[in-house]
Length: 488
Image (cartoon, rainbow, N blue to C red; front, side, top):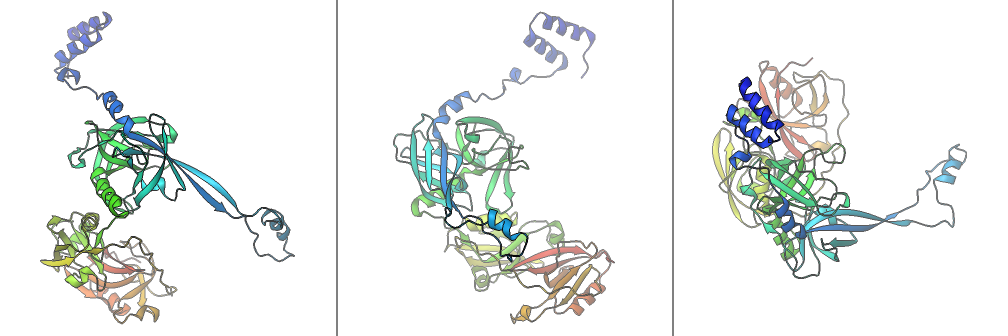
């Protein structure tokens, strides 16, 4: 933008006269720019919002007793030179005090949702606490009890015995827009009623191991002690619970995540009614559909959830769902990603019936499933024994494969080849110990029955060809897309 010398001279004279605002207006008139205040848009003023809503936010402190045993000496021979050292410094002498109990303390935040003392916070704030103390802004303190906690969403409902308490107003996260101003009130590092502000950075964020929450990402400064506190919009409505930060130092680094309040309110309703949360399941293991997988399966775009395996006798199995199916819609709702399917199924009440729209072998299909209930505790996958690698020539993918061993063939339906070694730099996430059960290329799927058959199949493919391997890893099935690169 060009400004002539006369315009600059007029502006400088105005500034020397002390009329800075008038100078800015002169500059805007010369350049054609419009300052925010000239258009009626000013930086937000949070003062009224804080005065109204700060009393609804509470400080939560917890104590927990931890029992620690005295360290014991390792089993060493008396002639070992380290025996005397560990005897003197590592093992508890006769008559010495036994195990001790230590008291640990932690801090968090919460907010009041009913005048009779119901308070929302994070599950991790009150986990395993022996005593919970809630302090209000008027310095009153109350002992609280846990009504219920849901670790999958990190939401907890606690209760204090009080009346006529100030209550938050609940907003609608769906109306939040990226770039909108938001504000947090909490107790970072124990500093009560601390206020920080920022904008919504993104919506519907997926975080590792957090499959049931479409997080609101903000750049609001959140630190230890803010957990469980409310995230307000500019109307003074709670739109989320501040739950996590992304950090390499343990402190705020510009990435904060809040649980949307609609998810929170659904969880707290169930916790208040039954003390637990009931979620749906259909008995499938799924993974994300990448662009390469979509091309391999003949799908127009990368969307949906790819079925890796189907639980025998589970709801999906009874409905006819098969490994390799891609679920595009659940009960009429589009499935944009594998995480989206988990949320949709989890939000469905057990016993409800739903229709799955599938992509199967290059064509659309439907399945009608009755949703079951997701167990409260996850079952840890058992590690399988894996054969030791032997010296063999790697195939065109840089993989040394072998036929299944006796332990792996206990299941009569078991088939495939085991990856004994990974050499060179093959494409895709294939690891030693994986069992390859099928190969899909150009929309055609071939079951893998032996190492010789698998290697011959690769020999017949052109260099640069893309193929998808169905892999069984421990108790999980997944699809891996690789490209023939003739690794040597």
